[in-house]
Structures are given as C-alpha cells and as structure tokens.
Length: 592
Image (cartoon, rainbow, N blue to C red):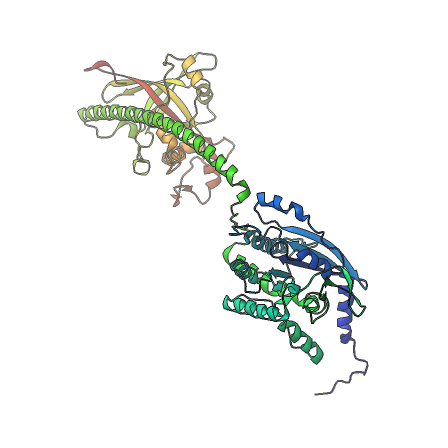
C-alpha cells in the first residue's frame, strides 16, 4: 500500500467546527426554561437574577387572595430575546402560578404535565407535515422545581409532581431562599432531599462530568455534587463590610451574596443552565425525552391520528357544570317520555301492518290453491305464471284513447328467489323494450287492465292494477295523485305490502336480480330485438354462452351487444288491485 503524503497545512476538515460555530452564531438558539413551585419562593426574582435583567415582572401580592376563587393552576409564558457578544438567544420562561397554593392540591400537577406533553405533541405534528420550515419549538429544556426550605424533607406533593416531571423533562431540584437556613441545617436538608429522591426513584438531570480537560472535569463534578442547588435570589446591589458592591441580601449579621459559592450554589446552577451545559440540556430533551414521547405515541397511534386526551375536572366550573347536568337530565327525561310515546305508536302501526300483510298472504295462498285446483281439472301441473302465456294489455294513450296489444306473461315476481329473499308475491311480470310507446303511456297513466284467456280451460281472468316500470338500476316509483285522479281506485289505496317488502329487502337488490333473471331466460331472437337495426345487422340472435359466479351473462364475442340490449330491457310489474274470473261452469266470480 502506498503512503499518502498530506501537506503540513492539511486539507481543511479541521475548519468544520469553525463553520458550525459561524452557522450557530448567525442562527442563534431557542431555550425554554420552566420554573415550578409554590408561590412566594422567589421564582420571578431568581429568573431576573439569572439573566441579569428584568425578564418577568413581580406580581401584586395584595391581590393574591383573589386567585383563590379560581382554584386552578395556570400556565404563564414569558418570552424575551437576549444578546451577548453578537450571539442571540430566544428565551421562553414558563411559570406555573397557583401550583401548591390551596388546601386541596389533588391533581394540581395535571396542567403542568399536559403542557409539557402538548409541546412534544405539537413538535411531532409539525415534523409530520410536508413543509417543515418555520417549526415552532417550545419543548421545555429544563424544569427548575423550587423546594420550600422547611429543614425537614420533601412533602408528598413535591414527590408526586417530581415523579411525573422526571420522565418528561430535565428536572433540576432547587432549594429556594437558602439564606433562611444555617449552613449546618442547609447541609442536613440537602441530604434529606437526596435520600427522598433516591427512595422514590425520581430521575434527576445529571450533567456530563468526564471531559478531556481536567479542569473542566473538576468543575463538572463540583456542579453535580452540589445538587439539590441551594440558591439566593436578589436583583439589589448591596455593599459588604469590606466595601465591595455585590448582588445580595443585607441582614443585621451581614450580607448574603448571590454569587458567593460559600453562601449558595447560584453560580453553579447558572453554569449548569447557561455557561457549560445549555447545549446538553437541549440535546437531552431532543434525544431522550422527546424520543421517548414520540416512540410511546407511535406505538399506540396510527400516523396522523389525533391524540386522545382526557381533560381534568375544572373546579371553577363545577357548580355551573352541576347546574347544566341537572337541566340536561330533565330534558333527557322529557325526551325519553316523548320517545316512548313514539315507540308505542310505531309498535301499534307495525302490528297493524303485520296483520294486513298476513291477510294479504292468506289471500294469495287461497288464490294459489284455487289455481292449483283448476290446473288439476284439465290435467296440467304447470302454473300459468311459469309458462310464456299470451294476454291482452290495455293502456291509455296520451290523447286519452284506449290502446290494446298482446304481451307475454312472464310469471310472478320473486317466484325464483324464494330461498334468497324469503318473499312470495302476486306481482305479475311483463317484459318489454323501454323504447316502445306503451312505456310513455304507462308513465303518463299507470292504470292498466289485462285480459288473460286460458284456452285449455276456456276461461279468462280480467285483471286490473297499477304498473311499475323497472329499468336498469331503478326501484318502482308511482305518482299516486295521478293514479287516484285518473281511476276509480279509492284515495286510501297504497302500494301492496308485497311491493314494499320487495323494495325494503336488504340481502340482495331484488329488482335488479329479477330483471337479470328475466333477461337471461329471454329468447335469443327477442334479445336481438332490443338492439337498433343498425347494430350488427348480420346477427339475428343474441345467445348467452354462460353465467359467471355473480349471475352475470357472458359471451366471448357478443358481450358489448348483450350489455346494450340489457340497457333497453325493461320489466313491467303489475300490482294487482282486482281480479274477475269467468269460466263456463262457475260463471263470473270476483277473486280479489
């Protein structure tokens, strides 16, 4: 292997950190800090002290009692832009006024937890969008939890919320107002807090310690050992006994200095948050907490599916909610009473319709029995409805003159679909072409009369009824005003129950199935007549080669012509209203 000689000046990859530095310097950074704890622990003062400027304004303590009416924890957002040596940081401070200020603080941590989760959710939804420029990132990079300096240990409320915060954000416990404890009491209090945190398995943010620089490693270890950080907050400049002007608090025994490491851990906490580990806080938020949230949501939700949240009860609106609940309950009871009345009416109507349907079925059975007897007298076993018998169909032309023609009776609707539909009917079927004149006549006046002569028994049936036109994909429709006004049918007459049952059937499209069955049984020459004369003039018959699994006709060469003929193929369904039967031995007899 040959050795590659590189010039002493290198090829330039060592300048990548400088390039990265220039990009970050130009772009700036976003940092979100949350302060959480009871009121009166100096959170606002600490923020202003930390950034050496007024970020948050102090509240008017005289009005603090007014918030007791709300009894809710709020989320207060303050934004600022800091610049130091031409580098800008867009700072967002999240405060939680109201937390821990009430006698009953049950679930007072819920708004805080939901806010942190909502920021992860918002960022995740923005990442899922096609255009991701200009994303708004308010994920919390660090949460300072302020502990009241009681001198004992953590309270149950502190433990409960710290457990929930530690799995979602970089949690940093802070002992507020450390100047209220003696050094000995402060050291003991720190030890008690550490033991409580360890006993309750609360995960605290731990800054990286190891570094290539020994001095940096030593400083990092000093910062890590100081937790929980005891701080003193003050924006006032006071003078010490030796004449120095420092930020601190002046007492009769001396001055408690903010930036004196012998007095408090303010400098160590400031180094942790800003000077040495701000980038690590951002990286940990991105790589650990946000990733944990994203993986958890992706394991339980589909892509793009909204998050299902359960909103906690708001005590502020409890009385109003109870009032609305009572009003709603009263309205529901009134509606239930009304619905029961409607239900009873529907049941009564259903029973009446069922009774009518049973009566109609009984009449149909009686007619079938009488027809069977007639067939047996002449030695025929086939029903007239199953043979291609001829009958005369009388309609009314558009000029109100009568029109009569001979048609082929194709039997009864659904007689070949009993197993599928469970229906039987007295609806007669006639087949025709939708382009014929009788279609227009029936559309104008659906009242018809049929004279059905039986040469074998020398008898005839005179049948009056209403005709429904069944074209492709249609359900029978009839203008009852036209029917009543143009005939002697009583105004109370309605479509037959068999017809309504056939229309409402849910298992199959009954009308299309009946139309397809009749088309398949049609003579091949009659199927050809459903086409125009110019359509395939050399073809005299439209044969069907086979039927597919769905019952559809098939032909390898004539399929387009078959489908065109099927478009013109139409059923005329006769809803029978009266039947007059005549025969030599029986004379005239009304059957319906």
